Image (cartoon, rainbow, N blue to C red; front, side, top):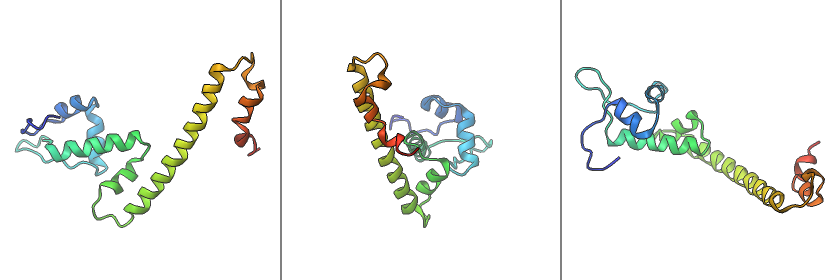
Length: 134
């Protein structure tokens, strides 16, 4: 969104700019994540504050946060904000470690000469922690 856009946007305009179906914005409103003001005809009018919230919601969802967690993040009076955010940070750290391991495994597989990758001792070692759970 350009800062030169000073007029409030309709739900359709905002949805198009964020490449979202309008029903998603309406759903986010129904669960309390958005509160766009209405014009005299009752139509939603999105200003800069609302579009910033949409950007925060999109970024948070992309990072794996649930709508419930995002609601806590955006609630300035939430007593549980730090706990929810710490849990999310812990989850991000866990997922990043899993992605790092998966990347190492995939990089090895790219260069491995074994016909059956699962028989390669080094490749098998990359899943030893998963096998240990059995």
